[in-house]
Length: 594
Image (cartoon, rainbow, N blue to C red; front, top):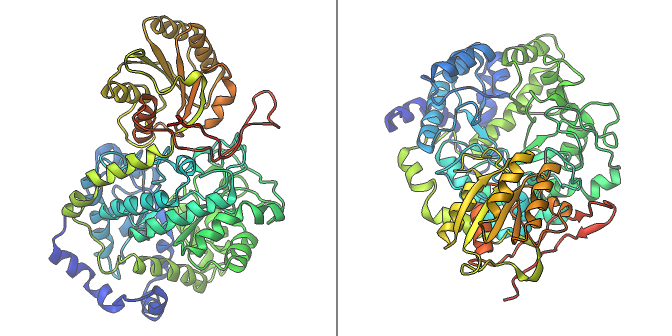
């Protein structure tokens, strides 16, 4: 890690010329001066936020070097910065950027050093998707919180603010200054394959309050929050990673539903807003995705909503934005629409050169680039990157995954678990009459570097609480043989806990056959709460909203009676046999009546 002296030497020129203090807009004159000294190539680079493989900026593993050469044409993050002068880098678990907090801090420092040592070097804005719940990039020992729909079930803005503050402090400590969270989409479609439990719920005002609270928490914790996915991705049946969703809401419905949380985020002073790769004909009938829509981004977001912060695209590698135009046109059209940051293009070389050529040919003006660069530099200044671009190991140790932070996460999780069914007061389970437990169900891959798998986490937590629990994973699509094995194992148990995950016909068969054994069965929805509609015969049903450890441990405490169920549904659950009718309304949730 660079020494304090190295840090000061590397940043002295920029910091001295900027002398950031007060609001970012008060320093626009100094920022303009910085921009005026940049070459066109440097300006183009400043607009991009790019992935890079490896745990180190200069010495990644050979497999990561090979991946970088194949996808980016460079060996390391440092080489990418030197060649393209990128303004931002995004961390992913699958890119091997996030092994542990101290390694992440070293990677962040290496990236800053590589950029600041360039001529007219600027600090890099490092970002990631740390939504919590099912989408996280930084795992244990960092503090992991319940996801958005769980927070919606808890309903406490104070908890949302606490989540943001603690998560923001931990991200900042490891060198990440921009977080692509919170999700501001209002999830009104139970079949939504890409948002679902990533949303706070289906009620616009409730979502708006929690979005604003989380924004205040994150930005109070020292990182830029990002409301996504504008103009609203909550009513889609297509995943924009793989297709091109169309939102059929009227303009009036958009105003009353989708727009409400984004307006709240803007009032809360949101630092950045992410676009959606969706077609929204009522807002723009051109057939273009919102990411490339001037009427949506400049006309509505900038003009009508009065937003003057940073606009970042969703990943440009997603199919939703690549359907209509080639990878060379997408970044140019996004800038023309009003975007500032171009996130993760499939080929950085293609995208970077396309923007450069568009300026050289006159399709984009250099003044248009300067407009976006000013917003980006304002954000970097506001985040303190010009004065303090580096982080320390001491700061990581003092901040990340502290006992106080972990206790706060556990407390918040306890307030989210939702009891939907409790026939004959089966729950809480009695340790004397139901000591021997069998835990079966789906074991999806860990969403956030947690200890997993879910059946194992639940079994361990219940054993710690005084039960004797055995885990028997059955998967998301159990075979007839797997079902038979679980049913046989249930004969020796006093009760069965079964985790459902976006319930399938095979999972339904498993649960029904377990119920038929006569053993008490407690089902736990470890993703979407809508699963309960498919299982009318289950005597007890909990919604945990995710399969991360913090939520599963909270569910175990509720099952054991160590905590009371306090969550309330933030979305309605429709009947399986008649989706037009509501089985459990928003706000529904049982208690133990104590």
